[in-house]
Length: 198
Image (cartoon, rainbow, N blue to C red; front, top):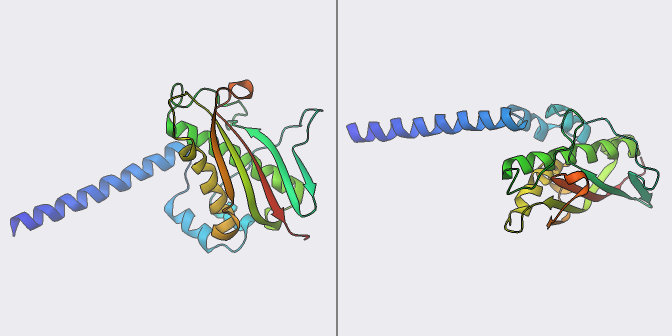
């Protein structure tokens, strides 16, 4: 009987430790809480899900004269490659696998995702007009030995799923490593989305 109680106590302790660990990760990397995630799942539209998750979209900078942030063609919106920028507006630089950990690379990818959402909203007027995430190209500035590019871009992909839902938020995707990226940033991502007329 004493052995069973000890096992139960150990099990409860492990669950508590896991919960504390998840809470720390959420605080450290800006992940939504479990209650926020549940609220987002119950929300009916991308704009409501974004609000339920407590996510704020960053301001959009003015694109250079030689390119556009996004281009519409029929019912498709082609978004240019956007780079990892932190909350202060500074580039998140460094090579994943050398200067940055996998978790830091994932945070950089999520930041790019938030910027892409901001561009979608600016171009379409509302994220509710997005019908489908069609294609994504995720580029990771990393060492030759680093092979977890898909796991880095997963943070972006999870954001799209959280905001657009399982059906509209899952598209075709490539995740590749690069010897370098503009300004030495950690991550650059471009994507294509299909949108509705209104």
